[in-house]
Length: 76
Image (cartoon, rainbow, N blue to C red; front, top):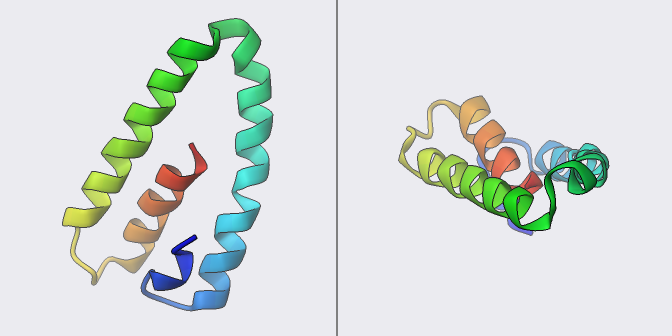
């Protein structure tokens, strides 16, 4: 929801944040039967939290890295 607040082009950030959700739904659909709901949820929440915390401490000069980590946090 706040992809337009990222540094860089707001339109590209919005397109990236919407298109990155399609693979996340497919991966979740695939792994939910193999891992179970609780372990998958714990793994995804930890990965999202770690990537968002790391993105908060990275310099704004590295726009691509911050965008990638933020998208990784929002995918999951």
